[in-house]
Structures are given as C-alpha cells and as structure tokens.
Image (cartoon, rainbow, N blue to C red; front, side, top):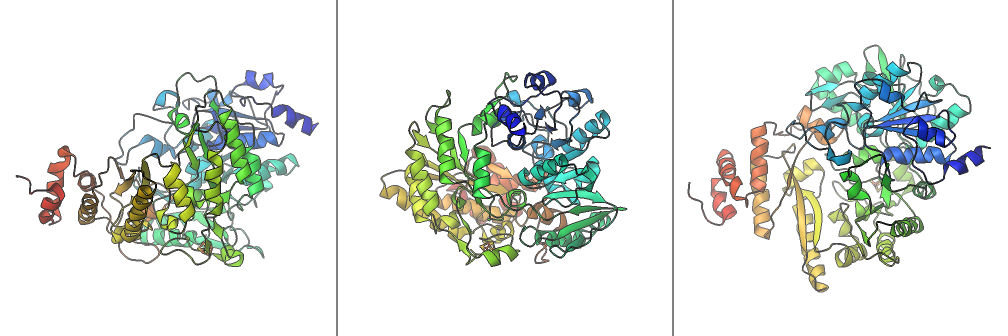
Length: 604
Ligand code: SF4
C-alpha cells in the first residue's frame, strides 16, 4: 500500500502548494510541509524541492509553501496542518545577504523571486517564518534548516547588527535544526517519527542540533566539547575567536564530537555532522522526477532559475577551505560525486526538454575540477582536522587523479543533442597544475574564449589570510593557460575575480594587485566588496581582529571610505575612478606608483 502510494506520488507533477492541489492527488493531510523564502522551482539545484522530492520518493506526502506573506499567519496555513512537522528554510541564501549590499544598503532585486522582485521574504526569514507557524499551529514541531539556520547554529557574529547573536535555533524557538546538507538527517527524522518515536525523544541524529537544559553525556563513540558560552563570546572577542577555532576542529564526520554551547540557562547541543552521501545515494536523488521548471503559478521569469536551468551538478563539497566561503562549512570537505552514468542520464533528460537548444551552461559543482577526487588515506581522512586539503600546501594524501573528470567532460560532449558545454563553476588553479588532462579538456572545449577564475587577491600576505593560492600559483596557471590555448590555436583570455576590503588587505596591497594586473594587461570589470557572512573564518577575523589559529593581529579595513578606495584601485583603468585612485595612492604613500598605473604621471 505504501509502495503504491509512493509510485502514484512519483508521477511527474509539481508538489502541491495549496490544498486544492494536494486534494487533486487524493491527499487530505500532508506529512511534511516545507516553507521557503525562495520561489518554488522544481529543480535539483534548489535545496527545498530536492528534499521534498526525496521525501516524496519514500512515500511521504509533502507540500511547499514558497515565499508566504509573513505579515500574518494565514498564508502559512495554505496546506493545513502537517501530520509530522513543518520544515523551514530562508532560501538558497541567508536572507540578510539576499537583502543587503556589503555596504548594508537595501538591494532592489532578488534573483530567487519571480520578476527579480525585492521584498518577497522578510529579514531573518528563518525566525519570522517559525514564529508565524507557531502562531498558526502551536503544537506542530518546526524543523529549521538551509544555509541561514546552518551557519547561524551557534552564537555568531552578525554583520548587519554588528554584534554577536544567539543561535538561530533559540532565537527562532524552533524544535530542531538541521545543518549541512539535509537529506540524511531529514530522512532519518521522518522515518523514526513514522515508526512511532515521539519528536522530543529524537536527539541523536547526525547533522541536527537542539536545545536542552543539560549538557549531553559523552558516549563511547562521541565525546562532548563545550564551547565558551554565548554570553562569554558576545562580550569577549578573544573568546569568540577561540570558540571558532575549537569548532573548526569538529567538522569531520569521522571524528567530530557533540558540541554544546550554553546560552543563559539552556544549551545548544549540536550532534556530529551527517556522513557524506555515497555515489549510489546521490545518483538516486538526481534521478528523482524533477520537472526542471518553476511552478506554473508564476508569470514572471526567475533569474536564478534562468541561470541554472541547463546546468548539471556533478558533485558536492569542497576541500579548498577558502576563509571567506561557506561551502566547506555547509556541504563539507569530502567530495561526494555522482557516477558518470547518472550525470550523462541527466544530460539526456535535459536534451529531451522542449526548451533545450543544445547549450549546457555548466557541468560542475562548488569547484568544478574536484569531481571524483578524494582523500587517499581512509584512516588519516577519518581523523583529519585540517580545514583545507590544499592550504597551506596540498596534502600528500590528496588524490588528484583527473581521469574521471576529464572522461566525464569528453563523454558529455558526445551526448546526442548537446552542441556546447560550458564549465562555469569555479576551478582551483593550484589543483589544475596536477590535472593536465582535465586542463586540456577545459581549455580545448569548455571555456568559450573566456575563463573566469577567482584568485580573489594576489599578494601573498592577503592570500594567506584568505587561505587561497598566492601569486606564484596564479602566474604559473596564467602561463599554462595561454600556452595551451595557443597550442590548440585559440585566442582565449582569463577573467579574474577579486575581493576588496578583505581582512588583511591594506590600500598598499591593492596598489600591488593593481600593478600586477596592469603588468599582465588584465582589466577587471567587477570587484566584489567583502561581506562578513555568518559562520566563515574571514567573518571571525573581521569581528575579532585576530586569526583564531595563530592568534596574530590582522588588519581589517572597516570604513566605507577605505573599502571604496580599495575597490577603485582595482578599477584604475576606468576614468571615473582615477580621482579615488590618486587619493588612495596618496593615503598609503605610494604616489610614485601613479606613473606605472596610469601609463604616464597624470596631471593633478
Ligand atoms: S588527510 Fe589530507 S587529503 Fe585527507 S582529508 Fe585530511 S587534508 Fe584532506
């Protein structure tokens, strides 16, 4: 009977967003209702639909309330009362990052909303949505997850309020928090509830956190680490940095402890991370019947969907460990790759879609050239507490064999109906040095004249704070790229992306970077101003002013003026920026660099 229900549910239909759609499936009650800050796009690149499809495939009745109006509880009742729980996510981005620029100015757009319209979700959506749900159904459990809840699960520095905030679980008054990728924790939760365990008794699922009045007991398998309390880290920046350092050592599912942090009279208790998904499990998820389209109720285009609709995700995770990036914290350091067959089958399904015209916009993951890579030493990997397999130098245990990734690209090009495949996911060029076959495939077939790479900075002092490869590695890559392009008779260019205003970066570092670009004849079109997003190492340094691992003081540019001048220096070739560049040069005593930067000493 359960199987029959599952089979019926697997018909390729959108998941219900209201009661009449639920009833058309014969569902008078749902098991789990997802509430999300993004529009409902039935595509595996969107986290909530992916989780919802997974539960549906296991026979559960699920629905999605997307971007409800949070000013009253009624929109949260669109699908009635769920039998098991509500699952809340702010969306693919932290709602504060989605709403504000790095200068804390309100954005006018939102790529995850039809018509690119701003204002379809509230600030701190996880907290607001949970509060409305509790108003509507006080006794129904609420499980929060997604990047916002995940990276705010402990006491964390919040750039927008410029203070340390409590755990999102406690602020939201939710019943459970799922962190990282949610498939395994969520599936285990629904299956145990289905088997009759009471919600409040389920306290041991990996990848979850809960509130408790007492510290948990250490088990034989898992010890308990208690972080400095919220009150301590909120008052003391050194304690905040120490807490960050301690927590960083507990990210590996193979050896992580339970981590607890007291908030007044209660503890936030966080179980070890979920184990990475196997290739088979990932393949099964990507074979679910996604319609690869937004729900038909939307009339305006959704920019985020337009961008990814003809892309294929090959893997998850990133072992780069860049200081400013949340991916390693959210998806984990272990690369979880799909099988080649699964990726090619998805490509064949993409080709069969009526709107597909032959171009695949991306085939990759968080870092494209990490597909199929892994730690070569199981025992060392299970105990490893390094934040990056590449920084400060590539680990000797890292297997960088590019046979799988290069073969995948070659075979993907041969799928009938595919005319061109771009690799627009980022690549790690320090890794490419060890991947000659992948490099040849990439440069020869998937660049389209311009390869976007993100060195983020190039002075070694700054890249060491960012945990990125330095100048020598970029120069080596630049030469290899140009040589390989010329060998195959193509004139191709590198488009580099940089961050200004990152901790550790002075005006003088930006002058050095601008001079390097000038010497290579490179011009950047866009500069990303650093945003201290929740939970990253860079954000910890921004707040505490020290590197938590070395205890060394780090210079942090904080004023809008200095951040603006840093940005201008990178845009030295834009006439409107010249005045600011001259100011910046004067301010850091580098006026002599003007001649080199502008070609001739400009008139003052
Ligand atoms: S042992 Fe080396 S390769 Fe393995 S996970 Fe740790 S850093 Fe990465």
